[in-house]
Length: 332
Image (cartoon, rainbow, N blue to C red; front, side, top):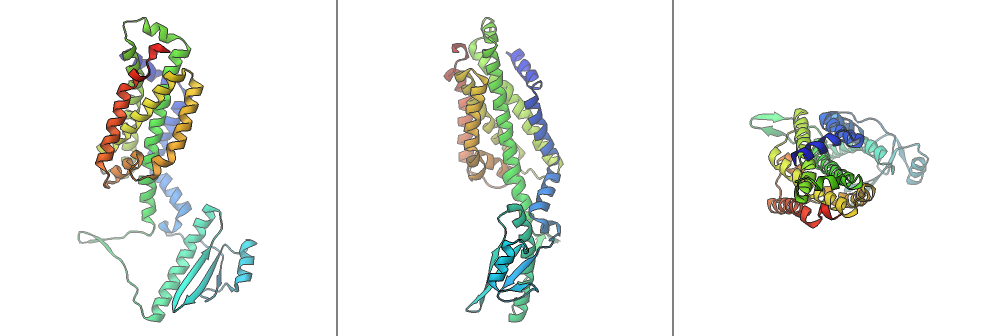
């Protein structure tokens, strides 16, 4: 049984696709600080103290030099001669500003950074005119003042709501792919007949096929958690994050094993499995109670619904345990 596990692990490292994905996961976790820096510079440059410059046309109350009537401003915007249009209106003494930016997401993010700076200065000017004091928010840790740059929440969201959940899902998917390939290889090459002729029972063979990817996933999960910590990403509850991540792997490995035994063909099993994963991905990374989101919340030290986490973990490992009985490898 242990010989089968060792053989599957060795074969996995000979498969270029799996090795490439593993190296990619390790690479992303290893340079997570650089990746974060690059994305923040792209989407939120004011976090780094860089606002850039954009051409902005103002309609209504003129608080910068580029002031036009609405028709001219929109004409300039559509022709690309200005990057944004601000329409200022006054209703019962309250100032309203409508902001029009390009459809392109990256361009809009860059323009909004500059527009935010203009509107902040405009707000401060209005406060001075109306005699409203400008309040400064200060944050203290103990007796020491802590400076929190604008946009720091963007870094937090990227790491704990995107990066860590995606790392956990990718690890689980790779482990499931490993299970599919391992089972299908035995079936298609007919080496399963040789294994069945040995003293090993079909149950032990099946257990070996799901044990290998679980060992692989546990090592890889521990590695990327360690690399994140070395990149000064605070992992508040690593054991809980590890446990939930492994439950995700258990669920996907169970699904992969069932697909492999059911179809017996690598291409069909991988195709159906990929469709199911792709369809469920939005739910896995957007819902509060989804397991992948809970991995990120556990890493951040935020509260999670332990009842849901426990139910999912128990159900996933239970499915993993009964999958050799549901789909018997000696019946293919």
